[in-house]
Length: 284
Image (tube, rainbow, N blue to C red; front, side, top):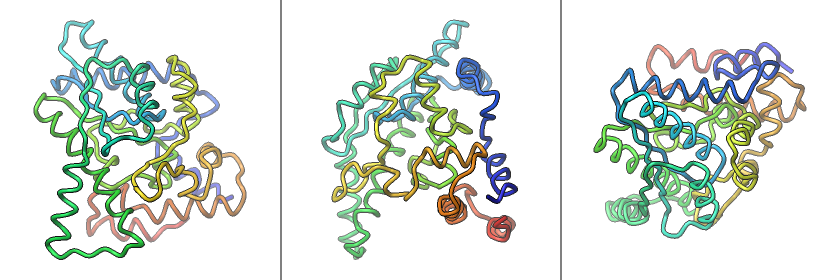
């Protein structure tokens, strides 16, 4: 393995040290971060879309605990969980179980299908043509961005901030939509490999069905509930091993680093004349 590149990536992504990792301490550190940020900014709380997976479930629970901490200290803070299905969500029961774990102050459900379909149809009427091979992929990104439009609209109307659920395993391979689920005011899961996200959720009492739900973006209608790992071509367990400095196969290392460099544009927003060369010149 290219240890120098691995260490550089781990440092850039703020990967937690597995040798000293303590779930209780990490929960408290991240809740304190969220509560402290509300106190410093004067924001009235947080909003987050709950999909049913472990990442949004943990992010939502941390946000709820942070708001409760602010209120206990005499402040004003509310956590709003949002359900954002495209029509009828195929894994709706998973989302319900996640909400039972999060226990949000408030839940709003918004069907994004009318807005997504109106945008898609208007673009087609304007003359946009998309190859059938990529149409569902492109429309899937419209769905992801529409979900963030809804969340930022609630945040703007209520004086809230939007939580993002980006964690280290997704960050290194860029497995998120730019300005979609990659858009947020704060990312309290930063630095956590997938296995550490699960550990924190388990520490907080999440059900195993929530913790072990197969990760899926579920953005393409013709490929419902495709697992993230199938799309990436590498298992999250292997990505976690890489991030934590363990040995992985040369093929897996190549796939992970290829994804990392291919998706640099997502981690440098916006790209500027001064960062463009730096992004691409050093492949370790």
